[in-house]
Picture 1 (spheres, rainbow, N blue to C red):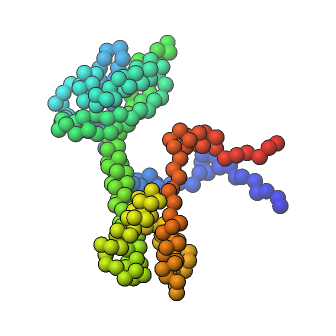
Picture 2: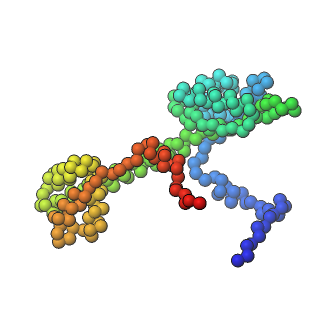
Picture 3: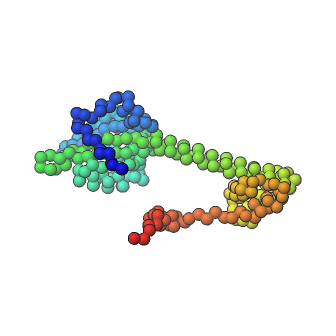
Length: 251
């Protein structure tokens, strides 16, 4: 089948972009505070936009923009790493980006991403560094909240399986809730598997069997006996697997 040639548009042929369409593409997600900075290396003169003051916990004009002012807000655990990265970036003048934490005026840790690029004079010397500071704390908070919600959901699912298995044991053996819990705990102890994981495996086994059926006691006993520890890769084994990647066919 013949291929369709790609069409190349000259700049004056490019379709215009509607502001609404551009906003729909770019303005997606969480609003982040973005500030600008500039430093003249020869004079040591700094300039910050109002947003940079705000994210560091100052009002515009509270402090004179300077190295010492920024250094006072760096998180102590990140300070040495950031200084090394910034020193190399300023020396080379190449575009750079780094992430670190700051501690604002209220003692609250915030995560920021700093980007920048050097401007050179006619002799090729880096004379100015300018760029942006982005407060990404809200995105980190959202990520933690999502993970917390997933953990809660997993806990509810695991507990639901426990209650389901206890209900099965109560029906099959004619025992109460406490005795059913003891039976489940004994099965988990014999298999060396946590109660929640034992319950999950039992419910999967019963589902595959199509329910308990006429031989309910034997079916449940078989499901309990089939519980096995879950093999989890060790950290170094997982790293090796990632490095090796998928096996390639011989050539």
